Image (cartoon, rainbow, N blue to C red):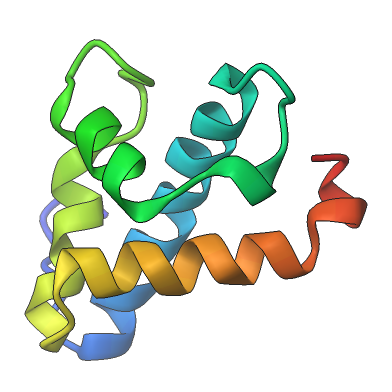
Length: 92
């Protein structure tokens, strides 16, 4: 996407959603039980702020969700719940 800029809400939402899944997946693997059920918004927010945690997850991409009017905590909640719904398929 070099030289192009995301301008539509759907573009911001898609890049943020795709990227946050990696952060959530990594957070689940850090739990002793390695289960998505144990991932909470508060702990994910802490991990999000730590640049050393899952450093390949681009925080700027995740933050683009705010361009849609959705706050980060609400986005984390939605994303965690969505991944928890398919946790069996993900093996977590």
